[in-house]
Amino acid sequence: MLTLGISKNVSWNWADPSTPAGLVPKYTDNYYWTRYQNYENDTRSRIFGNASLNYKATDWLNILGRVSLDNYNEFQEERVAVGSQGAASYARTDRSFNETNFDLIANFDKNVTKDLNLKALLGGNIRKSLLNSVFSTTNGGLIVPGLYSISNSVGAVAAPIENYQPKEVDGFFGGATLTYNESLTLEGTFRRDKSSTLPEGGNAYNYYSVAGSWLFSKQLKDKVDWISSGKLRVNYATVGNDAPWGSTKNVYTSQNLFGSSILFAYPFTTNNPSLKPEKTESSEIGLDMAFLDNRIGFDASYYLTKTKNQIIPVAVSAATGFTNTYVNAGVIRNNGVEVSLYGSPIKTQDFSWNININWTKNNSKVLELYNDSKNLQLASFQAGISVNATLGQPYGTIQGKDYVYNANGQKIIGADGYYKITSSTTNVIGNINPKWIGGIYNSFKYKNVSLGFLIDVRSGGNVWSLDQFYATYTGILPNTVGLNDLGNPVRNPVTNSGNSGGVILDGVTEDGQVNTKRVVIDANSPTLPQSAFSYDASYVKLREATLTYSFPKAMISKWGPVKGIDLSVFGRNLWIIHKNLPYSDPEENLSSGNAQGIQSGAYPTTRTIGINAKLSF
Image (cartoon, rainbow, N blue to C red):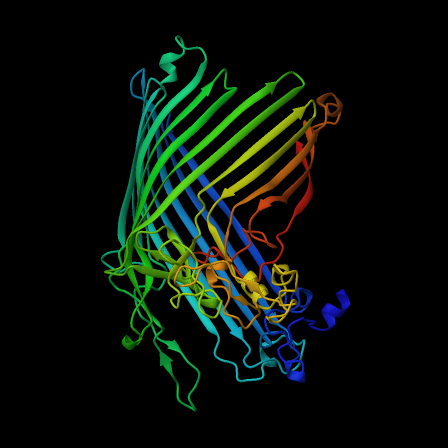
């Protein structure tokens, strides 16, 4: 079977089996074919490191100078073999990136009085980066199957796409921390950056923070012995962000020759010379407590953030010559609660059990968009599905066609016996954000053997599955076959005889009567809207587990400089204990930037099992 999959792109869904040219898959390539024929290469060589010099001027002042470098070169190849669902092609990308940071920082640490300590810093940073890339691809297919070279192109090859993106951000910063009696702390920071990706004259932006904490358990240590520690903390911070490279000035790009004429054109997205830096404001209040000699404790916090002046491309009328333009738009609010509980229920000389539980709930809401806009499309996909920022809704709503409902929320069945479906694709049919996420980590240790494992939980949110959409309409899923309420195959024709097939869809007619019309469900029937393929993305997973044996110190004390040896067997992504999305992992989706919550061509997720050895000297 494996050999057959490699030698020929065997498929259940040929485009047209009656012709040689049609013996290619209509929807999806055979997975073995993808693995062994349409594979990619990605090679990277990387050098990074830093050098620093620290000068101690006095016992309370030192000056640090540091230079750091991160440089890599990449070579990427992408192949689509002759006989694939898509046109055969070969593409290559050569990319290099270099980032250099120069830092000069003065650190101050001095006891101003017996009970008052001051820590401060003042410094500057210069960050220079350069991205170079060249992308080339074939055109119209490959002349010789299996030969992957740009020169093997059927058609004339377009000029390669070249990118040259230098960037520099210069900044200076400072901060101070005052601590009184080791219990009251007040901290403030300030930074001003100047970025080359923002318009000249408006490319500098400030951000700062202020925070305070009170270690009140210090005043209670002689009065309440069961409180090990207790701290109350508050903070407020602003963070700035510059623009994407090349979003302030329009530039021409070269096009294919028109005969012997040289052509240049503007891009479809127009840039904006008046962009402002993005800004995020956040505030937080928290309480940290520990009890019974730190055997049990918790950390809890409430936060609120607002992101303003986001730099995003919004749609404009194509009559302007462009389809999008960069603007500062939108205000998004996030607020929520984070809680972490930890404890040691059992702790003896030979055995211990430690547990840590974390829980987070975030609420997101779009407060403002660009001008009078009510919706901003972040990404669009097949079957009329999109991910959006919708005014008054959480950031990341999934929109598409939905059922038509009556005033009582019941699905309406049309005169043909099928569900009535909205004509618009702007109905909210899901939300990429979970209601909450959490995890439980347990660790057990008996003498020299320890076992730790993490249970990871997500509750709520949605994932829209193109895989389920296609699999349902092409009839390969179990729910498209079976027996109906009469005991007959659902795919049988609808007749007046005793072997009638079809089903009676659950819903009401437009006058509110219970539907009684029997219909056949097949790929040509307008049966289900896109909302039927929006699934609850909840899951419970055994995320990781580790079993470790530590060699006794008495054994390794004779082994020269070796002070400790730990041998471990570990595994990650081991078991999906519960999920609501059939046939696939809810986390396996197009999770790139804003393109989240959409599943298309999902592969089984990878389980990792390995061995680790740790030696201490």
